[in-house]
Image: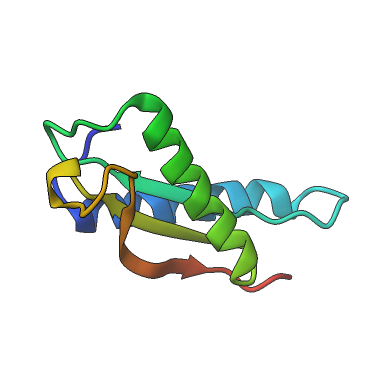
Length: 101
């Protein structure tokens, strides 16, 4: 999805989290929604595999920080890294945490 600002990206991730959580709340099972969202600046040079690994790390962070939340970060271009390993710069620790019913 394309968004024009990090604020818009945070609102989109929060909205998606609320919508998924709403659907999951109707389940007979005790399930929650943990999400990782990655803002990728235009002209990034990360491969698709690198971006997927970064988003997956964010989702793992959401799970390990209490579950039922979305975590969003911005991918740092390779030229800003001291080494070639991809690394997300966290834009916000948590954009939403919905209390379990």
